[in-house]
Structure formats: C-alpha cells, structure tokens
Image (cartoon, rainbow, N blue to C red; front, side, top):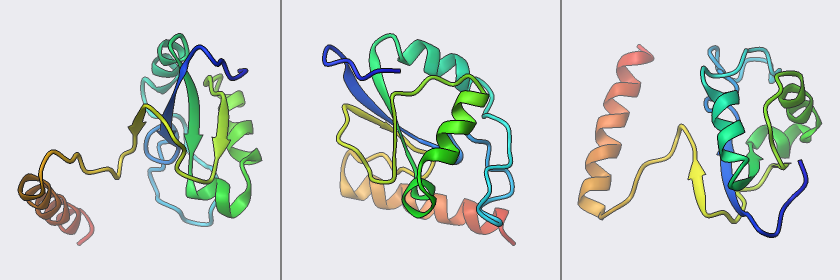
Length: 120
C-alpha cells in the first residue's frame, strides 16, 4: 500500500499481534500463521490509517522477510520498520497502558506474576 498524506499512521507490532509467535523467538524465523482476525483488522484499519508494522526483527534482520510474510498472508500494510514509529496509536502485545503511575505499577506487577506462572 502507498502512504497517504490524508491518513494518520497507526503502529502495529509484528510478533504476537500479526504473527502468532506461539514458540517465541526460537531461531529467528517467521514460522507461524497470522493471529486470528489480524487480516480483517488490517483491512478495516487500512481504510482510515497508514499501517506501519514495527518489529525488533526488522531492525536485526531487515524488513524484507516480514514484508514477504505479510504479502503471502494478504495482510495490508504501508511500511515495515525496525524502529518505533511516530503514530497516532500503537498496538503492541507487550505494552502497558498508562493513565497514572500507581495504576501502571499495579498493572506491571500483575503482568509479571502472570508471566512467571506461564513460564514455570
């Protein structure tokens, strides 16, 4: 997709948001299928936003493999980057919502406890 100056950018994380990433990083390959609903969501978002897919993977390995995977799975995107882009909104499976520090610290503690349970 071409970037439209009439649309705002929305930043979408790749692993865990578009790519299922069910086995984690592993050998660094892109091995999994799309997250359920990802294609349909990008179809809808692309009507209003430029979709900027961001990933550490693009910084370390280049964005070509991600672009190929997105095309193969018919998932719309405008750009792939290895940096957190300037955007109107961010969708990231590792994000913690901020409204004030007390609530944010509580959320982090809950997330850490849940993560510890899953990984033991």
